[in-house]
Amino acid sequence: MKEYWTALASLMGAFAFLQGVLHAVFPAELRAAVARLLGRLTRAFSPYCYFDVTEMDGMSTNEIYDAVQLYLSSTAAPASGARLSLSRPLNASSFTFGLAASDRVADTFAGAAVTWEHVVAPRQGQGFSWRPLPEEKRRFTLRIRRGDRDKLLPAYLDHILAAAADIRRRSQDRLLYTNARGGAMDARGLPWDPVPFKHPSTFDTLAMDPARKAAIMADLRDFADGSAFYERTGRAWKRGYLLYGPPGTGKSSMIAAMANYLGYDVYDLELTEVSSNAELRKLLMKTTSKSIIVIEDIDCSVDLTNRAKPPPAPKPRPGIDGAIDQDGGAGAGRSITLSGLLNFTDGLWSCCGAERIFVFTTNHIEKLDPALLRSGRMDMHIFMSYCSFPALRILLKNYLGFQSDEELDRLGDAAAVLRGLEEWVDAAEITPADVSEVLIKNRRCGKAEAMRELLDVLKARAENRRRGSGGALTAPGKEAGGDNEEEEEEKRALESPKEGKEQAGIDSCGDGQDEEAEAKKQV
Ligand SMILES: Nc1ncnc2c1ncn2[C@@H]1O[C@H](COP(=O)(O)OP(=O)(O)OP(=O)(O)O)[C@@H](O)[C@H]1O
Ligand SMILES: [Mg+2]
Image (cartoon, rainbow, N blue to C red; front, side, top):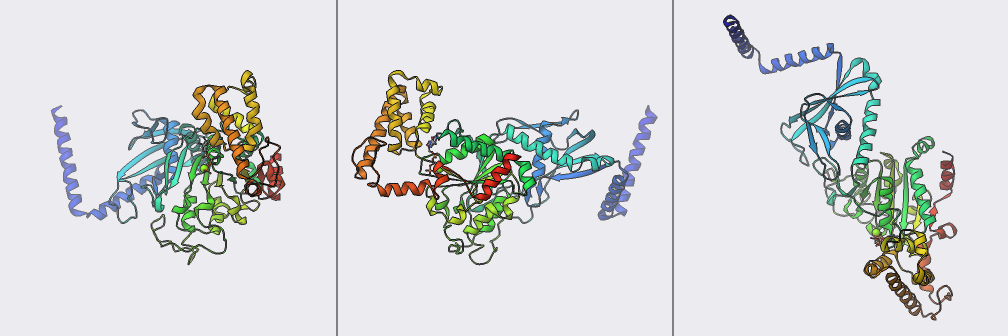
């Protein structure tokens, strides 16, 4: 035993001596070159090949890194002894397991075994950057057998991206993104600030005519399931909706219902915070698939009435990548123009990514440039009208707790009140928001009493309207036309830019659109 220890000690001594000689004789650069050469030789004869997926791709976040992290946390089996980090992202409702530094997990795909390693190293010095970079450099290294390479790539990566998107949708609450003030970016190079999106509005709670609601839901479902159709017809997989109507008629509630129905995230684009068309493009490029991009009150956001003439250029300020925007020359590159916005929804740039819905809202459709309304641009025009009787029934159910239409129709004493509501609701021209307010205030007094209060409000409003327009006090429905022409004119402007189709409140724009709808039915 003693001889064994003596031999080991002299071996270690010899090794230390040799190392000292090597360090003294060979300079550091030479040693590094030898190490690199050895590494290359080892890799050349190794039966494996390696792929790095870094967290940052240049200055921006690498989407594949996030996808791999999510995918591995839920599907791959940790190797024995691997340490998993447990976290709950800010906006998620479930926990996520992540690989700790230098740990590995194994996975199989198409019968081939692969290994992922998570490598974390401190960042060597920030250098010059417009924004702070993460303190650590993180990457996943994928190891696969050389022979499996063609079989696995790129199918395995496609599989990971699809699986990650699916996990994200199922496990995470919806996100509502807003563009950061002045186009500032966060540490990961994203110009959008996310917050949890927990809007309770759904198509069940949305008060509008059931037939129109069903048509919108069918259109959305058609769109979400239309991957094959859009690919076959060579169309970009996107759809535009224009929601218009008076304030408080449910335009924002409709957007929330759409997001909840499809499980999409919402990007609420504040146009007044965007300084140029180029910045608008960059914002678009940083949105994800399966999302709704919303511009509320589009008529108020920027001057979009004249496509040819750009509005006066604001003072140049840093764009979202920090540089002063030089795109497009005077005016065109320095401020948002209508054509910039149209390119955003329609042009080549709108096709980066897929499965995206654009929603514009306005209270004054008549103020919009016809270029925004022309066929094919916004695929569907949806008029959000004053409360109709079918919509009112939905609000009664929502706020007073009627379980079904049958219960509402079996009211006994209050049946007359319901009939009264039906009689007066159109004449009152009341918004669903105002009906909701009355019902919220009176819901504790009991269903019948709350409905009676609502009926009083409807009658008072209808009579006020008639008095205001100088009309005689007649029963609703028998109202003589002509006296309140101004109001009628205003209503017509809101109701319909075109006659006919849009009277139904939904306008599937343009002939091409009809053909498309036809074609889609055949898919
Ligand atoms: N159609 C509707 N169905 C159900 N609730 C509605 C509807 N319209 C309005 N409300 C209620 O009124 C409130 C305001 O509605 P919402 O913000 O959706 O209106 P809006 O049309 O977007 O108004 P604005 O034009 O002022 O933005 C909502 O919180 C909702 O409770
Ligand atoms: Mg709104």
